[in-house]
Amino acid sequence: MQQALKGSVLLQVDVTKNSPQDVALLKHLQVLGLPTILFFNAEGQEQPERRVTGFMDAVVFSAHLRDWQA
Image 1 (cartoon, helix red, strand yellow):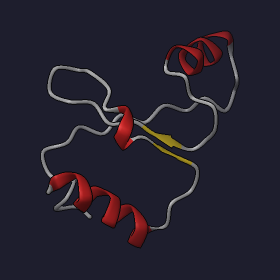
Image 2 (tube, rainbow, N blue to C red):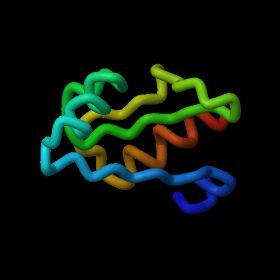
Image 3 (cartoon, one colour):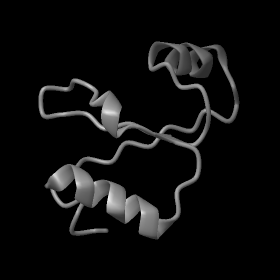
């Protein structure tokens, strides 16, 4: 999995406090459930077809990453 994410920038946001800023961010990104993983291209545009919502085990997530590298 590390190889599949090589060259990627990871940004993790803790929204567990559910502050007004957290709520605004979730609304802006249209996050309906947690955890959610968003993917953006080099221009900063989200790639919505790559979005993952909910738990995904390592094997399935690795396959998801491989599918998008092809």
